[in-house]
Image (cartoon, rainbow, N blue to C red; front, side, top):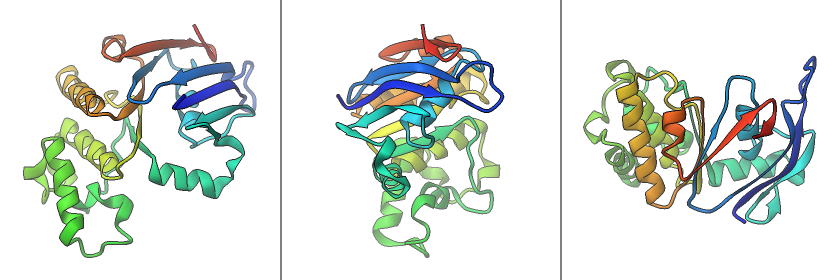
Length: 219
């Protein structure tokens, strides 16, 4: 199995119930999985643990057959840098950088100034999300949907195997959100595994598979 969670338990201090209460889940390579549920259902906690951004109190997360939970922080950092990419509800773009620079932000310590193959790489991914003509613009000159597309381009620049999306349309109007969903579907058809957390049932229904969560468990 490509990515698998086994009996994940996560508790937060002061909580009456665990954020995750023994969740098990399998995700196939190239799958588009949506995780839906109301606020506090545990869906974002699950996404954080699957993506190695957080650790469970108990349980395992196997990626390509290897358990990433006991692997150590350095190993998890390398995994996130190499194989995992992330987009969130808020775009986290740097307002003083151009769209191209924001796209290549994960590599900026290696490529100042941007030139040659790095510029070509950034422009290629911007073309994939329909923003090649905005490469020199600043985030403040873009619409909300365009800013989210830059965030997606930044994720794609890493050549990741899995894209973790936490409420990627949460701050967008319905038309713009539909455009972002169309893009995610297109990328998934190209072979990218997508795991998306959302409270929007209409968007969740566009995935290959939908799981719903409540009170830290899968319904």
